[in-house]
Image (cartoon, rainbow, N blue to C red; front, side, top):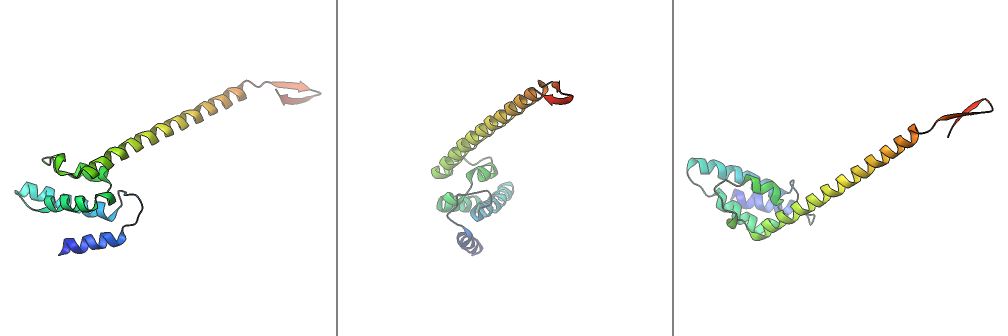
Length: 135
């Protein structure tokens, strides 16, 4: 009952944009995973099965990297849909590439600042006709 309503509501909110940590399905899965962890401590329950079924149905709308750390420790990754794992691996690669580009840009910026500083400190005042100019 409540899960179907929550799933329908998440479906109404979801857009064609890429999955993010703020996706309605991601939020719903985090709630279910918290329930699954509580049930695991209590000795059983169906929240984990429900969560994995929801992942299988709507994995393309879920940010796998924000979900996978919340899986209970006893859950085998073989139970997680392959499409979700594949998306997590691709996203991790994208994040590494972006971080590499940012590092390169920051290094280039630092080199530019160092060059400008060296240029500025190498200038000496020269007096021509009583006025000071830099060369």
